[in-house]
Every structure is written in structure tokens, then in C-alpha cells.
Length: 166
Image: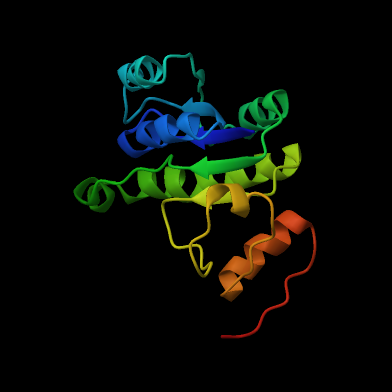
């Protein structure tokens, strides 16, 4: 099963790729290397004993992201591509909004274009209750525990959201 891992050359993303490979998944890594190094990908390959599919691309490039997902038959996205230094985010807030907010919106648009309806967003609480194994999560619809999560589910299901007003 092909999973797109954004920010897969970062610390958490690269460790996740090792575990995904061990579990039988086929991670396709996208990273712009602005906050990571290619050496992380080489180390994952050395640990796993096989090559990773890697693209140096930016989540804000909707066309590139759509094409990568379509090319690999992506089933879901695990989203780690976010800037995270608190001090820098205070000094350069627009940089963070552009990457973390606009980038995630662009990624969601590319997912919709490519027909990919599942995302694990590591950067924020998406409002889903409970912890489910990735295999199970990819095979069943997630239930939204908040209006925010319902809005995201509705977007990917191409329907109007049903808000509960919590």
C-alpha cells in the first residue's frame, strides 16, 4: 500500500518511514529539504535494506503533489511537512503561515485532485477520537468528534458537512 509521507526526511518522518517499511507499507517520501537533509533518506534505506521513493518537492506545489500521488496510486498521506521552531515562528510568522497553513491547504487540494481521501496530520489535533492502527484506519471511515474534523471529512467526501455545533 503506497502512502505519501510529507516531510519524510525530517527526524520524525524518517523514523516513521522505517516503521512503515517494516510493516509492509510502501512510503513515497516528499520533502523540500528546507529543514532536513538527504542523509536521513540514505539512513532509512540503509536500515531498511532497500531504496525509498523520494521526491524533492514542496507541499505548496499543488500540481507536483497531485502528480506524485497519481503516479504512485497513493492511498493516504501522512503529513509531517511543517515548520516547528517556536522562536522563529514568532520572528517570521508569515513564513510559518505560508508553509504550515497554506501548504496544508494546497496539499489537501492536491489530494482531492488525485482522489486521495485519507490524511494523518501529525502537526495538529484533527479532532478524531481514539487511536486506531494505521491498517484499520486506512480501511474504514473515521468518525469526526468535532465540527472541524467533520468539515475535513466532508471536503474529502465531496459533500456538505453536518455540523453538530459543539
